[in-house]
Length: 226
Image 1: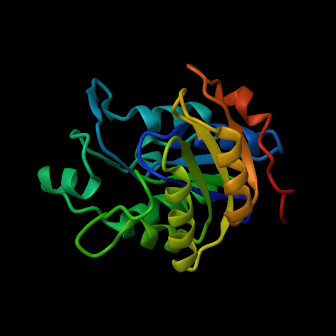
Image 2: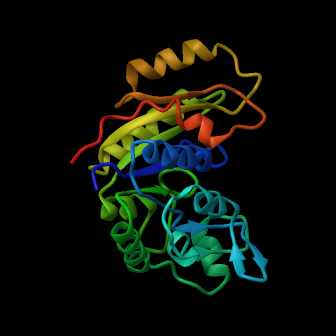
């Protein structure tokens, strides 16, 4: 699916879910049926309908297809820790094959899919596989969310280098200013423009609250591919 994407970030807590939801809306604005997926989530909570996750909830709200929660977020752990540690704590082994089964089902329901990773790029899933292995199986182009704060140039360039070393394409990057007191923001973005593979898809200034629907209107996506 050439209009689908895998979303990663320079760290955790830098707006991957916001960007994923906005990207879903941006693709919908191009007339597509769009699925979302959060394969693994930590820091979940129990409800009467079962275990839920805030990130997965946001993706469920954004998508315009009918999909079961189990498909959108197959692995949900209570502890807000690295997923392979949370899985071990609960006596579960994260199976890439199980995730891929859900991924294929979602693909069959939609024209495009946006998959949100966990934390940064090089996150372990089990004793054998890391997040790049899953992204490679999905064969999606990667969007990097750069958390705008001190140190983000180094983090962004290392992330991009690791993605390319995994034989995956960088579709572009999003700058999301997460530190309201960040210095020389314009200069940092120019340094990244000169060095990052792929175009700047969206530039998100510091804001207390951001509506992903409105944000989607400013996304610079490539033309639809057949």
